[in-house]
Image (cartoon, rainbow, N blue to C red; front, side, top):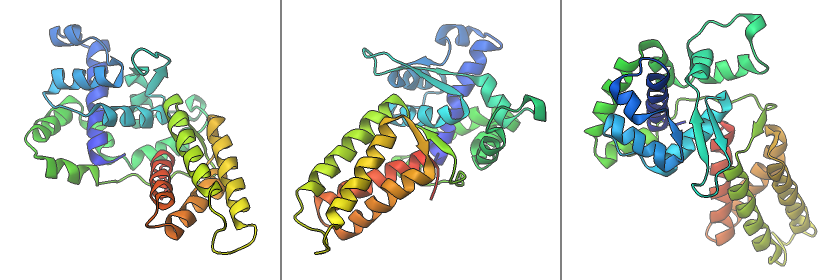
Length: 259
């Protein structure tokens, strides 16, 4: 998660915490942090007077799924119904958790969470921190906001962890994988190496099936997709295959949290 995404995550958690906590007049008016990505972007605007892009909000919600801080329900009319759980935020970012109370994978998620420095700072300082930050964001121009989008502090997950894909991610990644498979299928040969095209197609199709399954080990996806796509991105740098391969690699790396 980049710096701007972490601020948006803290804003969402703050809205949810206010609804389940003090129940101020404003909190009662806004309700809990739930709904479509667009609805939640509107809630951020109402609470903090900062206009967040709904696609960025959705990206944040998808990232928070790793910690069970967000959850997506099926809703074709709205593109999905999201909820935010501030209790799970304190569980991973604030509370001291005894060994017997740790869920499976807690230590790895806690370790990854410790690299999300903005969320950790919010956990330590609470509402004063996020209100101060959102005021600063309101005054930034687009260049300054873009600099925050480029600032990443999170470190890699362990390579053998299992990554879960949201419904939207499965649809998007599967569609793009099919597009690149179709493009490669039309190539007569790759680097004039016999059998290389068929090998690459096999790896791409295997990776697509892992995605469609909804979850897979990161190292398998790296072997089946990331390495193959990286090769295609370099080999077809100035062609449609290369552009699509680069785009897909970037999306996968963002989801994995790996370099």
